[in-house]
Image 1 (cartoon, rainbow, N blue to C red):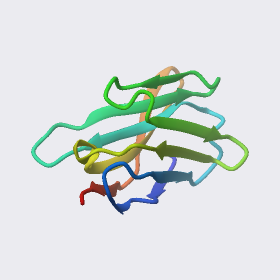
Image 2 (spheres, helix red, strand yellow):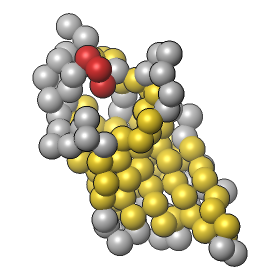
Image 3 (cartoon, helix red, strand yellow):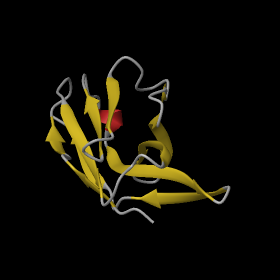
Length: 119
């Protein structure tokens, strides 16, 4: 199972930007889908965005046009550029990866990084 380590969280004012990074412990070439989820206090974890090994992306409606996911297979890195941040984006952000091993899905999660949007 791959180890995923997030970085880049912090406190930012509304309208500001942050870039999150997720470093994998090994090659991500075999990881079919990577992405980001988030969980706000008192709420369930929700999908933010995903990117496939082929580069296809998917975004939650709430972040479309503001967030962009990047995948660098050579560096084993996935990044999330977050612009025009809103207070409702405040959450713990988790890096996620899914690969298939002998046809069965195997999911990996990072430990999470806190993003707080507040003035």
